[in-house]
Image (tube, helix red, strand yellow):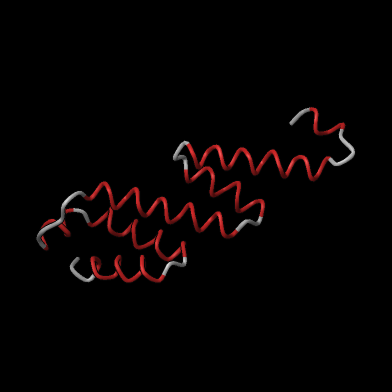
Length: 104
């Protein structure tokens, strides 16, 4: 990053560095940090991909929900899933999250 300041294509090089950093964060499952960088770069597709990954991460933490009591006991996680589904723009995820939220 320091050496990019001396490049003739400084802006392009810095964008590439930021993109690679965000991709590395995504690969390390540090999705929130990756979202910030992708948003700064204006890469909405990657931002939505990060939110889908966050949704999936929350979904895995739920484990096996079998009863309404299980759903209610995991209300915070389900609300997070709902938020991530909306931010991802994925209709299927939104429907799934809503089906869980209605039991809260």
